[in-house]
Amino acid sequence: MRRRAPPSPSNGSWTTTSALLGVPGASNTFDTVSYMPSTLANFDIGIQALLTNRWEFKFDYGLSLGNNYTSQAGMARFAVHF
Image 1 (cartoon, helix red, strand yellow):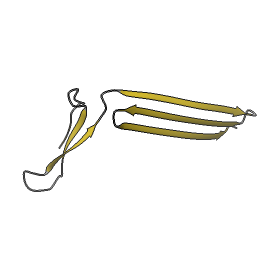
Image 2 (cartoon, rainbow, N blue to C red):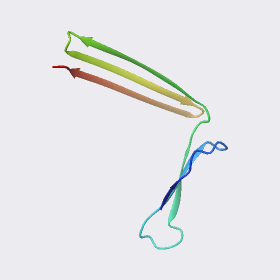
Image 3 (cartoon, rainbow, N blue to C red):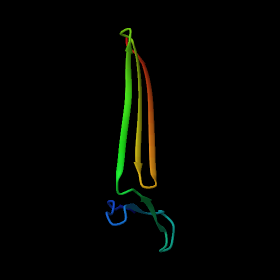
Image 4 (spheres, rainbow, N blue to C red):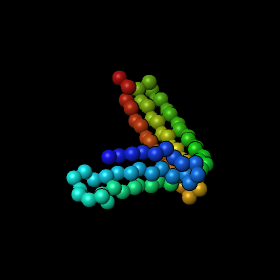
């Protein structure tokens, strides 16, 4: 059994209730709660360079900020076109 509830605007959390199959007893369910900030700011920046019609370099960086929340992502790509 698995149930997902949408984020609640009142407490800013996401709750997933799960159960372990094959476990006897009525208390085999558990909740996983993820808290989210009510406001989130996203910043993204990237650069791409094409050199001598064959080489490509690409770098991206993303930052998300909220109340007691920080998420960062980075990506680097190198390609040789033929």
